[in-house]
Length: 101
Image (cartoon, rainbow, N blue to C red; front, top):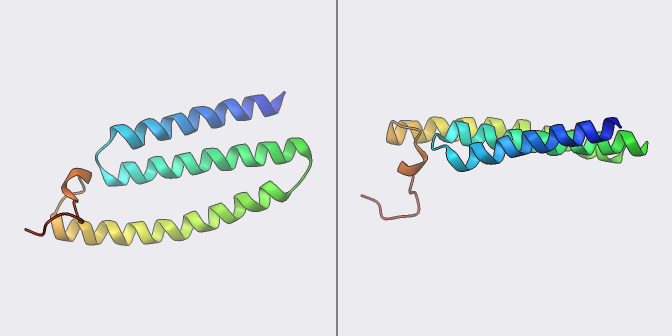
């Protein structure tokens, strides 16, 4: 019974993350939406693992959290560099693969 509630919550969180990823232009909000989606997947891993009585999915979830923490430091430094170059965090301004003008 509780697994169903956790899975519904996970689906809602993942959906909010997808909507934020698609509809926003600020790269910090886009990054937060990606993090929300990863946390929704972690919630579903832990809920399924607890329901089955195994701990393997919980270990995978902890590894994902550790990778996400290192990713946060990398993205924050990237945000600082991009803001220094363009003085904005609008995702439409960052066409790094295009022509340099």
